[in-house]
Length: 516
Image (cartoon, rainbow, N blue to C red; front, side):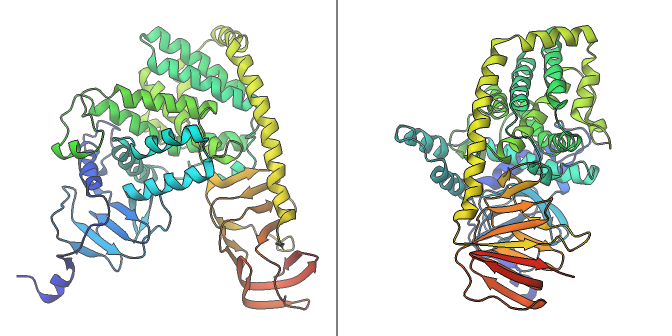
């Protein structure tokens, strides 16, 4: 019999508010990746990686976590997991936003995180408002969202579990997200080259002979080398880092669909709407290849944002997947090497292809002379024009705002802003300026703490060392004096803490110059 203390740790009547089928799906995936003979990635054993499934503001569910945070109680209801014990906490959750599939530190332990089914679906519904589909597209958009990918959650569990493994095996290889503010998102040459890479990768992954794989691989390498010759070293490093981090995790999804094919699925998985078993997984694999082509070419959109960082960042998930799968098709032994410092998927693929200068020249002539190249150049020139108009429109919002707060930190030597933001929300203005969007910006500039109450575009000027926030209204009053030192200051839409400097108001522009 349990003691009264032990009994209090159990929730005999606790309801699971998350989708219980997600527990069955992660159980099925851990049977494959949670052992020392993991066929998806040699040397990776996910058995000790805990799982967090969450529904924002309603419930966190932890599986196989060695030390759940305060507030979690042991679940003893009818749903069990083969991976380990289940812990539940109602109310406030580790993540406040819908659809955040990631990995994170949970009480000192790296944990894979997947959003509940309804949380992901709610995020999709909200995206429809931003996408504003045409009336004749509404029915299809709703149908596509309601009847989702029956294998998607399983792939996502593997994807996020692999991120935990990456961080254990290799550090410092991820892309620096602020580089997106300098990335030439509207460059015609870069966007044409990325689309050509997608065509070649798809051809290589679907080729029927080794010779055809290598021929397509050479054309991919030419397209990549020529495109990246126009990029700065920082932007190339960002691509390498994001292909390593997100591209390899997306490759794990692709590889898992190869490994599972022909296996017998657990019976409970047949309860998933649309599940078709494992007998033939060519359709979801080809679906990933089609997504690769669509996102890398710009035919598919994400976050209704064709001009900012969203397409730049997301296409690297798929280019990384494609190059990793290409290495497999070329017969390379590469998994251990990519975890080492100084290696990239591009360099490993170039080595595996072993193209001669004559082969590269021939492939270059073939690509540049194709009708596809000419069509893409025209399409991407139109994208650049529309993008420049969009950037100008977003900048004009600052002039139209009821009031703006400009924080000038140019007097603080050695200080750089530290912000919490989504890299998908960055919009590059020019080499020195970028705009943060989508989530409320929070962070610090030296000792100053700043946070938005809701997401409004924020302009960061690196060269002038200024950050501009849009306010909901002009403040009623402002602190006066050459040296203001306040613990807190709430402005309409922006909260400040540890304020040290002086204010100046010109019209509806408020300038805060920070001092030591």
